[in-house]
Image (cartoon, rainbow over all chains, first blue to last red; front, top):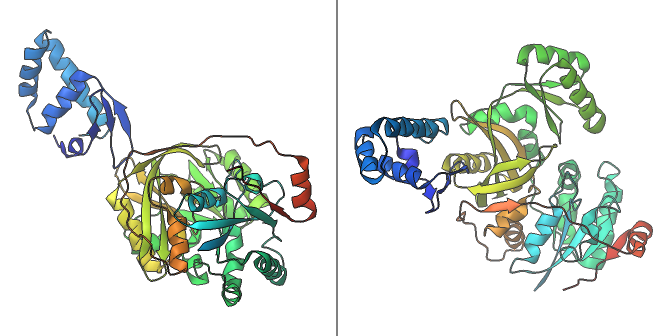
Length: 80
Length: 351
């Protein structure tokens, strides 16, 4: 996964995201910010799932589905 | 040093001219400037905007006699001692290109494209220019008759864009819509009318000012967030897209562009390719946004023309938004009377 575009995003603490090249803006939540930051560190999906599982009490399957869904959204917005 | 600048296009209406944005930029610059509005109609809102236009004059239509146009400017110059005229309307540029030397003899300076430059950015010439500056141009056909339109639609297909020679562009999804837009544009603006392939993507605008030697006085780029039914920017956000900015710089260098310009481009969703849609040979109506972000191109243009020190950088912040809004002024009918009967109106600033 190419995460280069994620590195150029301006992300505020409250989840507002601005792309200075396209002018698009998005909103996400605390978990979204965490996932984007982990992707920017080139972490594999398994590593991201492990880190999230340590923070949030949710079953592994649900977490996996949510992560895939989030990455799918990033692809739809041409961010990865 | 008091500088007097005459500005046209003060028709701040639903299809806004750039004049009031230019005047506002000058008023907020470091210049001590008197702004003179050049209007074509007594109801152009800029005439009544005390804070940005100091005095307005009604002008003869640019499509009329050259001599009466010069005579009117000479009259205004005899009163105002104009230093610079900033032309802000496409339709009047040809006459200003004709009389620029006459104005220079009077001591009035302008920074406008030459006839050759003006021709090279015509909608019918854009394909060649786009290729030369390394961007794409949507396939198009120029039409000067109804049979031309039908032939063009057969080739381009739907959806397509139907565009006027100077202003207005509409998307047509079928023959009925295309015919409607074609007739409307032909009646209003004449020919040629462009039928162009519709590209799915997002529209971006870049503005700049060329000094005439291939260099620019600054560049500023936006993404249109919302537009009006006429396709005019209503909300926008500043962006830093190096590919768009570099393409604009290449265009300015290639044409040795003189004066303000708006580089309208579309980035295709599927490929990310840049398509050059149009080059407007003057500042756009949203020019004040650039000034508000620190790239005051009207100020730089005036300073350049008067050989004053000026900035030419393009350093601005991305993520600045322009919020356009509507407003109302309440004026006494006597002001309308003055501009209608005398052809001129001095504003008394409330400042």
